[in-house]
Image (tube, rainbow, N blue to C red; front, side, top):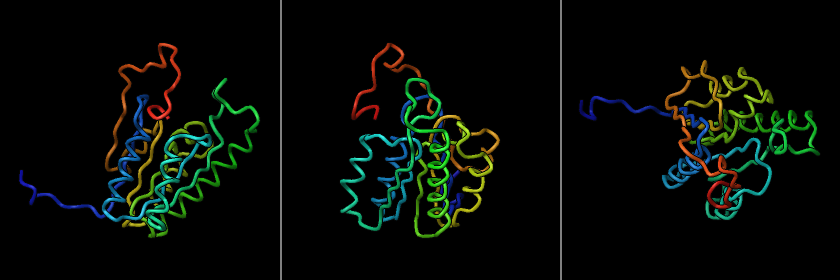
Amino acid sequence: MAFEDFDTKQSVVIVYTGEGKGKTTASLGLMTRALGNRGRVAFIQFIKYWGVSEHIFIRDIQPLYKDQLHFHKGGKGFFQAGELSEQHVSEEQHHQAALETYQEALDCVSSGDYDLVICDEINNAVHDGLISEKQLAALVDKRHPKTSLCLTGRNFPKKLLAKVDIATDMTKIKHHFDDKFLANKGIDF
């Protein structure tokens, strides 16, 4: 089949999910492509509130891209994850932060102001019950026709796969965490 036999979509929904490393990293690559193409990008981050490398990177490049790049960090940390959970954050605070972050994502994806909206770790927020599958489906359904949407995090709901155009499952083959090594700054976070 030749390329002339293919059509182009105005926008797509992309999912990076799975147990393996690389979901946020892939979305940052997508952000880089969109910005390099002079697109407008909103990067909305659920869950991660602590200082991770992508926060520093986005903060540092925002002055270069001005209103072309919008960043919203809305998480309160891991939810019900044992030792990794933030003990000083109540369940209600986690839910409230997720709802506020969801509203930010919904506003961005439906506005038509962005070529790409990335909702990093939103799948985790759905899996943890901080927002519902119905809300995730509404985010996809209410997006502006010209806005592509990227959803990252483990446990993307399989019943919503029919709503997406591209889905990648990051499969872990090996990770040093399993050998009791902590995450490396600049590599894992």
